[in-house]
Image 1 (cartoon, rainbow, N blue to C red):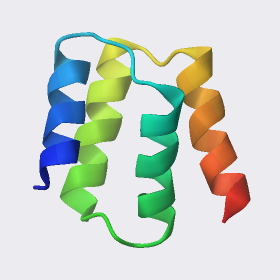
Image 2 (tube, rainbow, N blue to C red):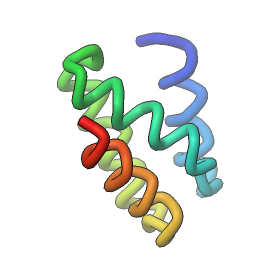
Image 3 (cartoon, one colour):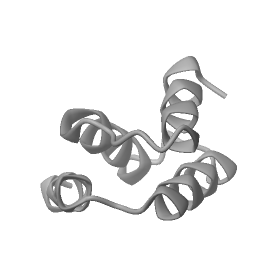
Image 4 (spheres, one colour):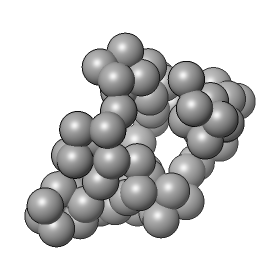
Length: 67
């Protein structure tokens, strides 16, 4: 697991919100097929457990629309 995703997961587990640019970059990588399914699942489950903020949802949507 790459260090950036590991750090993102730790922040989510610690119930910290993600920066919009951080989540947008992650979702862009997902949409481009560069993230393993297990990593995607881990981030999405941790995000859901923390509770998504409107900023995080908007960042993910923005990344998907750009692809």
